[in-house]
Every structure is written in C-alpha cells, then in structure tokens.
Amino acid sequence: MDKLQQLSKNLIKRGFNAEIFYDHSYLTEKVYNLINGYTVGYGSSMSLKQTGVLEKLHEYAKMIYPHLPGEAGINERNALTSDFYLTSANAVSMDGHIVNIDGTGNRVAATCFGPKNVIYLIGKNKIADTLNDAMIRAKDTAVKLAKHFNRKTPCVKTGKCEDCLSSECICSVTTIHRKKPYGVNISVFLINEELGL
Image (cartoon, rainbow, N blue to C red; front, top):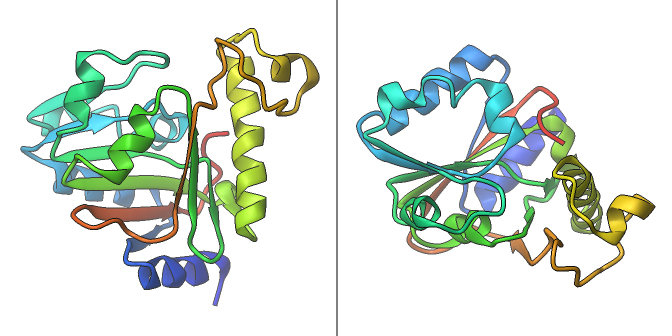
C-alpha cells in the first residue's frame, strides 16, 4: 500500500471522506460537480490556485465568498455559513491529524463549524510522518507565508518560528482535526502532486 492509500485509510477511520487524485482534470471535475448550484466560501490558498479549481468556480457556484489575507469582513463571515468551504491544510500526519495555523482564524473556523461541507485539497508534500512533524511543518509554512506577505515579524528575519506576539503575526490560531467534528461533512482530497508551500 502506498503512502497516499495508507493516509486515506487512516483519514476514513477518523470519520473523514478521503479520495486520492492523480490527475488535475478529475479533481476539478469532482469539485465542480459537488458545488454546482451551491454557495461556496474558500480560504486563501496557493494549493487551490495551483489545482485550477478557482478558475471556473464562478461558472458553477451560486455565490462565492473568497477570503483575502488579513481580512475579516463580510465575505469571510458569509463564507462561514456557505454550503461548501474549500481550503487546504498546512500539514497532515500519516495517522490522519490535519494541522492548520491561521492569522485571522476564519479559515480554520470554517473547517470546524458553520459550512455544511468542507473540502480539503492537500498535495503530497504536506504529508508528515507524525503529528509532531506535522506541527513543525505547519510552523515552517507560517514562516514562509510571513515572508511571502512581507510581514514585519521576527521569523522573517531569523527564518524560524520565534513564538512571537507581534501585531503582524499570522499564527493566532492553531487547529488539529484529530477526527471529523459533528455536524459537518469533511472531504479530504489527496493529490499526488506537490502543491502550495
């Protein structure tokens, strides 16, 4: 059994729907079929952009509520009550823990409660062996994002998490999904490609 198959099996044990994709076209087709005619929110995500899912989203979704980095306005609040929420993860451990670090909290909030359906799009580069490794990976990703967004944080200077309390810190909230929460349908689409940071 390969790594993606084993991870998929472990995610299913934890109550998530899990599916493996080896081709972008099948992935986008699957997402469009699911969200067709529904309201859709989505988090800021390089993975979503790289898969091409966002390109034709407006042709299928009834209404779209995007998240802009650092924003906490009406779109972000509407996304919390959308029919579907699309996002990625900073890391996922081989035993099925999904880890995210967020600055505003709206992206991680939407994966816990609010939208009826959540779809994670996760590239193979985000898979870590253990939960501890997934936490390390998530923090390393936050450092890269802070640099990407030109934040004035200690980590941008040192290249590693400094556990700061800077006003520009993008690490306000950390979530670990150890199993699917009650009342929300969560699908994890594992993609056999390197996507996002």
